Image 1 (cartoon, rainbow, N blue to C red):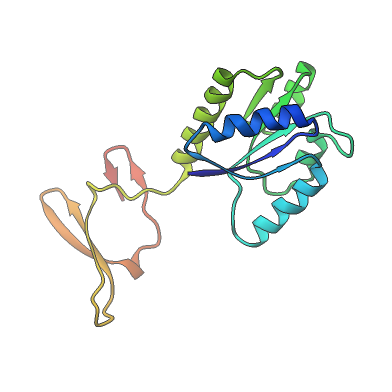
Image 2 (image 1 turned 90 degrees about the vertical axis):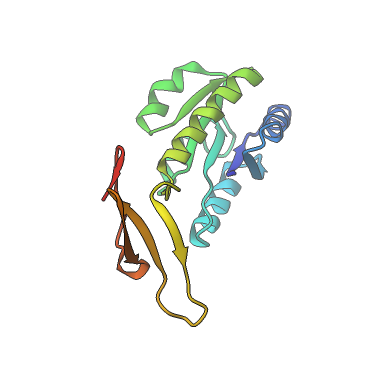
Length: 175
């Protein structure tokens, strides 16, 4: 499940986006904002608490600051999907590493396509331990060191978890 927020000053558009998010089981709406400044405070709090926001749906034209200005202010950005009626901001949005750009009125089909692309990107960036590689994870109740068995060709190799610095996937192989 991925967390998201919505920043939209128009109540009807915000309600539509909330309804769309509710239709997607892999999305968890943390909060909706009519103010980008309130959203900025929320994002800073979540980042400080170590709770990431995965996806941010943001309008561009808003009264206090624009969505583009918000993106320029943010140090650590979630995946950003801009929602706007103005196509002329697309180039500037992509220069700010915007993930997708939804033109209003937003159809459910186009919304779902953007979310699917975002969840694929987020899933690909998460560390994964594949079942084929890890045969067993064992922690002894007596407090001895935890270890895993990793397949190396035809044999299993015991590796203590505290000795692993990182795991790198190389197509069908792991090093």
